[in-house]
Structures are given as structure tokens and as C-alpha cells.
Picture 1 (cartoon, rainbow, N blue to C red):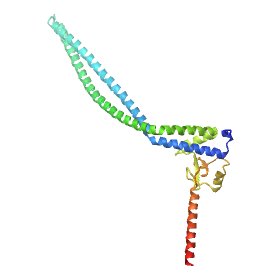
Picture 2 (cartoon, rainbow, N blue to C red; picture 1 turned 180 degrees about the horizontal axis):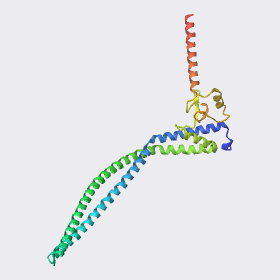
Picture 3 (cartoon, rainbow, N blue to C red; picture 1 turned 90 degrees about the horizontal axis):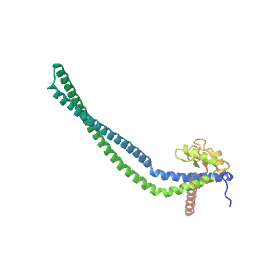
Picture 4 (cartoon, one colour; picture 1 turned 90 degrees about the vertical axis):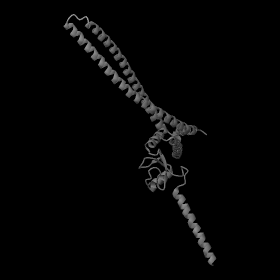
Length: 279
């Protein structure tokens, strides 16, 4: 039998294909729902760890800069101390008061430089201590996040392992079903499905109402849906409507009527039996 092109399919066949596709996609959604928020949580955790890593590197660089500044200030102190010793030696050979005063001022200036450098070193050491405490805090936080990330990844991998094979089969089935549906109709279906809160683009009529938004459908419109002459959408939510029989579902109302009929016939039988026993 030759394979029908999507454009050659009857409306009923198109609706059946759409409903089968909807059912398959809903099953894929269920598999993904099992994973829940785990993929997003793993991604957020990875982003947080990357941020912590960047912060740790920045703190480490700041500590190195402070240490380099301390080394430089220690060198400046050594230079200033050499100048002090030199000027003190020259004091003994000063030829006059003016030269003596000038050397004394230089000694005082160099000693002030030494004090200033020592102050800077103390400040740098204090900043290093602060940064080291912050570094330790960030490292502990990162280690904690890494542990949580490993647990989340393990949990996600476990769920993925269980559902991956089945999900791939469903995806392949969906691809085959999509190939049977004409492009324009498939695009419309995907747009409807994307805008629908529960991801349902095709729903069947249930209790005289739309199976997606539960708004009542007029009797004439229900008759048109059962005729399968054209594709009909819900005027409230825009979902494609099909009749329950096409979806392979027995209408709830019919079931209720059947139950009522069974009850009535049952009560009639009981009455007849009771009447006969009286006679």
C-alpha cells in the first residue's frame, strides 16, 4: 500500500495523527517531569561554584599583591636604614652647624620613612589576615557546594538512566508522527501546545466541554466535531478539539447513562419479581 502524503490525508486521519503525537509528547513531558527542577538546580549550583572559584582567585591575587607590597616596603626600610647609618657617620665629620642641621634633618626624614613603611606593612598584614579568613570561608563554602552538586548530579544521572532509553524511543515515535502531518498544521499545533499551560494542544470533548479549558461547547459545534469534516478549535483556549471516540475514550456521559439504564432495568426486574411473588 502506497504511503499517503500529509496533504492527502483525510481530516479524521489528520486528527488521529495529531492526537497520537499529543499523547506521545505528553509521555515525554511526564518523563521530564520526573527530573523536576534537578537540571536547573544542577546548573544553578555549577554557576554558583564558578562564581566562588572566581572570587577565590581574586582573593588569592589580592593576598599576593599585599605580600609583594610588604616585600617592597621592607626593601624601602632597608634603604632608609642605610641612609640613616650613613648620615649618622657623617655627623661626626660635620664642618659647621649648618651641615650638622642638614644631616640631622635627613636622619629624621629617613626615620619617618621607616615608620611610615612599617605602618604600611602592619596594614598590609592585617588585610592579608582578613583576606585569608575570607578565603577560608569561600573555600569551605565551595567544598560544601561541590558536595551538594555531586549529590544532585548523582540523583539526576540515576533518573536519566531510568528514563533515557524510553524517552529516546518516544522522541523517535514523535518524529515519525510529525513526518505524517502537514507542515502548516504541525506548526499550528506546536504553537497552540507552547501557549497551553499544561502542554495540551489537542483535547477531546468531555461532558459537553473542552477538555483543556472546560468551557461548554454548543451542541451544534459538538456535532461538527463528531463529523470530522474540518479541524475545529476551542473558541476560548484555541486548542484543537476532537470527539472522545476518535481519542479511544468512552464519553463519561455515555458511561453514566449506561449505569443509569442498568440501575433502572435492575429496579424494574426487582419489581417484577416482587409482583410475581405476591401473586
